[in-house]
Amino acid sequence: MTPSSRPPAPAGQVSECSLRLVDADKVEQVRSRMPAEAEVADLAVIFGLLSDPGRVRILIALLEGEMCVCDLAATTGLSESGVSHALRLLRGPRVVTARRAGRMAYYSLADAHVRMLLDLGLTHVGHTGQDRLKMVAGR
Amino acid sequence: MTPSSRPPAPAGQVSECSLRLVDADKVEQVRSRMPAEAEVADLAVIFGLLSDPGRVRILIALLEGEMCVCDLAATTGLSESGVSHALRLLRGPRVVTARRAGRMAYYSLADAHVRMLLDLGLTHVGHTGQDRLKMVAGR
DNA sequence: AGATTATCTGTAGAGTTGTTCACACGTTAA
DNA sequence: TTAACGTGTGAACAACTCTACAGATAATCT
Image (cartoon, rainbow over all chains, first blue to last red; front, side):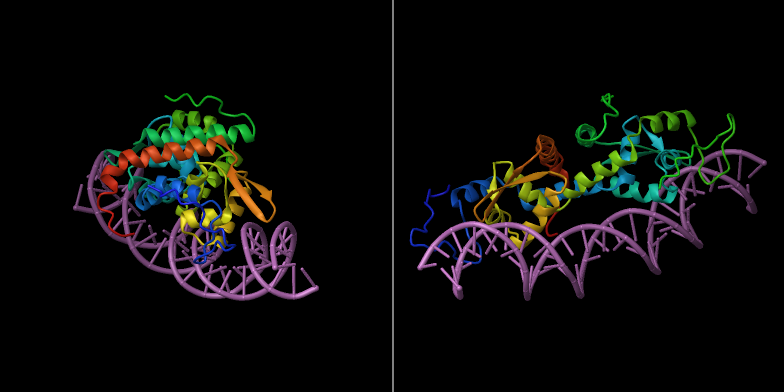
C-alpha cells in the first residue's frame, strides 16, 4: 500500500499543507487500519448512550433481568418520564427491547455487547475506586 | 442528590407517592447491587469520553502505539488544536499519558481497560452494523 | 539575540443534551 | 360507559459540549 516513501524532508522542511508529519509511515499505517467513518460514528453513539448516569443505572438494573418503567424509576431515582425518555433513546439503536403486557412495559437488555461493556466498565472503575460489586455474575 | 430514601412500602400495599412499585422485591434486590453513585458517575464520564468521533479516532490510532500530536492530527483529520483539546480531556482521567521529548509530546493509551472497551465496541459495530449502517448515506 | 516550531490554553458562539411539565394514548377496572 | 392507571411524547429551558480562532508557552535553530 504505502510506497514505503521515506519522509521526503531531507531538505529541512517537512510541512506541505498545514499538517506536519513526524512519522509518515506510521500515519499511513494507522490511517489504513482506521475503521470507516460511519463505524466510528456508530461507536461514538453507543458510548454516548452510556455516558449518562441515569441511563447507566437503568442498564445496570436491567443486568438482573427485565423490569417495568415504574420499577426502573424507583430503582434509579429518576422520574418515570425521565426513564421513558431514556428508554426511548436506548430503544433506537436496539440497546434495550420492550415487551408489553397490558398497560405495563417490561424492558430488557437487547444486546450482549452492551452487557459486556457495562461489566468491563464496572470492573474498571472498581479498580480505580473501591471494590464493590466484585463479580457482576454475568447471568 | 439522590434521595435514596427507601419507600417504606408497607408490606402488602403500594405506596401512593408518585412512585409505584410493581415488584418491590426485585427493586430492593437491584438497588442493593447498584454501585455507588460516584462509581456510576465515573463510569458515565469514561463512556462520555468515548462518545465523540474525534476522540474515538484518536484512541483507535493510539491502539497501534504512541503518537505525537501533529501525527494524530494528520491521522484523524482534526486540527492540531482540536487534538490537543481532546487529549487534555483524556489526560484528566488517565485514559492517555504523555511522554515529552523536546518540544514534542508523544501520547499513548494509559489503560488496558480502554483498549478492551474500544475493541469490544469495534467488534460490536462491526457485527450489528450490517443492519444499521446500510441506510446511512450522510450524517 | 530573534525566529521558528510543537504544543497548550482561553475564550465565545453554535449546537446538543437532560430534565421537567403537561398532556395524549392505550389498557384495565368499576 | 367513565375513571384510573402505566406509559409515551412534545415543548421549553438550563446546562453542557464541540469547534475555531487567537494567543501563550516552551524548546530548538540560525
